[in-house]
Length: 393
Image 1: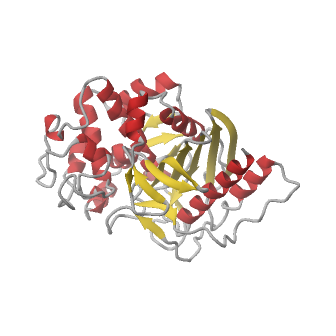
Image 2: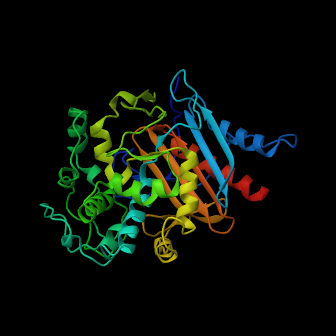
């Protein structure tokens, strides 16, 4: 039923070659072009605005397209539109209360947690990681600073590139890997710290260890204390440390490359959650995620100074994904530079972005990975929806 289409999707690479396709955000989930889009019928003049947006979403959902989608759009913090389409499993439709893995959007939350600890005086961005943690891995220079980790300037090779890591996870799905054990899978550095930019999940793995060392608490406890309870975001969970309450959209993946998606819900146990850790293991509803974007980028979650530091971008030589700040991407969507992040992990794909001009925040969550055209459909969906929203506003 869920056979994948067979055509080439050109992606903008944001990590070294060799990453698993659905490791957390191994590439930006952003194709180079959406011209000549054959899937989207022009909206008719008789449709309401909500019907236009629903039609755009539905055009990306179905057999050989996206399996299920939950999408939320806010304007200046008010949830203006919410949409669902498709299925969680063969018999259960997606509903707006479902939680999805948000994958590398987690990095916005990890970076914000670090900034909250900076505000509390527990550390500074210039501190070397060796001040807080000891790692028995010669590939990790303990003079690397917190700032270099946040901005992907430390040169650490992505741990998902190690050939033994997924066999270890899949050999025992019920036994989690400790973060310090995962750090042992980080290979030879790509370059000297501070000399280049290279997106790497290893940077955020190490930041998770720093958070726990500095706070004396789990990452989940700190996030809930600093953000979720304080901001009223009750439908966001850090899966490594917390039980995810409420319905979860079933994750789907093409496990063997035959073009068919399989429900991998039975594989999502402690080992999966642990391996994604602070690179990717937050689960959320689309509504709470769009609200997080609004609250984060409008200095409700952090001070104005900290927020400004997070959105001070290193310029990247790319026409679409053109900048990276502290856990935040700057991406050209619908003609506007927006702040946020994309995400991809086993069973899920995601977008969360905020436009500082219109104060529009959007979250799009999808319950599949390893489908040949999933990245293209996700990008086209968000680009098309935002184009209509900006015209309407």
